[in-house]
Length: 293
Image (cartoon, rainbow, N blue to C red; front, side, top):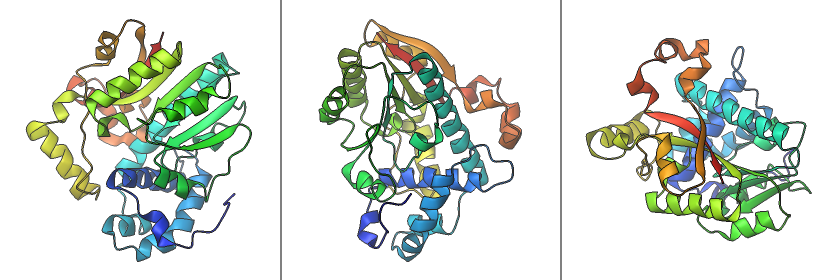
């Protein structure tokens, strides 16, 4: 349910990085309206239809392009496969911890809180920058179990908010987030989560370090700006050599499993779905699941 109408274009003055949240929103909506959708996200469809009139009038060509559905179908497929997998991680966690809490880091305009259905977590937290949460609040309403937190992920006051609801097993989801952040700050964040939420689980999308700088990094930035129409401020800045690198950060960090788009073997992946055994492709971008003991 929309809590209040969108009437001011100023509500959409998001940073370049926040525009990636709008892109993933429109990808989920586009896939939801496709034949035999990978992910059914009625809330994403509802939000995009409400945003379209404003985005079409925007002076930002990225936002205008989203309203006109200028999104590659392959990108919509990849984003939807990823979102579906992160939903599965959340459901698996709740099956093991019915009293658990879930924190969606850098949530953008995601509606995982609704997609999960039953059973509900003890508490679900959607965390993003204040300007993003201001837009979210027009579409999502806080409740006894659902909370929106307008903080930078590096402003650790949000952890105080989560802990104020009492001790619970915790799952932190970082879908499409860490690669855009400062490497030292990402490390400090993970170590702080381990310290303040011992035994928590972290599921995060990772990018191989070789795609961060140099020629390959330039290729990625060019793809983002030209093919995905993202702003010049959007670039990958954090990467790792492999999932086990985080285990070297501190004792107690333990890799549980990994997932790649190729593992879904979904027919909509096309020729990429037949490339799952090519290491160079599997090691570009993937998801890693950790225990923070």
